[in-house]
Image (tube, rainbow, N blue to C red; front, side, top):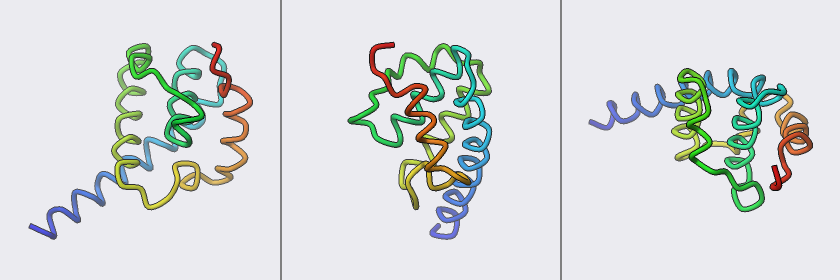
Length: 105
């Protein structure tokens, strides 16, 4: 049973990391989906500072929506902060903050 749980955790981690690698470039783009993904990632990064409306996930294409859910599962019991899983994550999250960090859009 413990081995099954560990395997499930490893699978969830791998799926989340792969999804995160797909989401970051989307978040750094300039479409409606980009805004939603960027705000989602900022919400995971610092929820009190960057509030995210979960109903915005409805605006995403199905594969992108599923990737967000995989990253959310990764973040359930994180080993690292979300930006630390990504190469040059600090710089990329600073870019996300400058793009999507305002709460008045």
